[in-house]
Length: 142
Image (cartoon, rainbow, N blue to C red; front, side):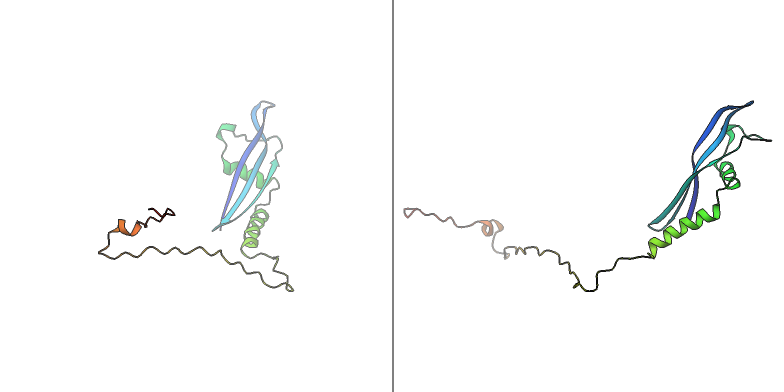
């Protein structure tokens, strides 16, 4: 199973005290996949104004912003467990809807296609002769 975390959008305050382009919210998504099955969770995480070190907006990395999300209430393990469960539920559904037991089974039969037999041709008969049909007329004089 593959799990991938993404930051999809950042909301910034143009100025916060002497700082510029201060990230206040990150929209995140956790995607998972296994073969043809997939799951996802998404959300937003808000941040308090920075105190101490500050990374300029243009120098931020996705990993850094994700670490802020994890440090501010996004439970990485719980989210990944949720995505994993979504995929497992597709592979082995916990609830199914079988046919009603008192109804006879429904058989789906594909439609029959008409069988067309090609004309028989032997090696001595020209193909054009096989395709030609005699002309039949209702005119007794013909």
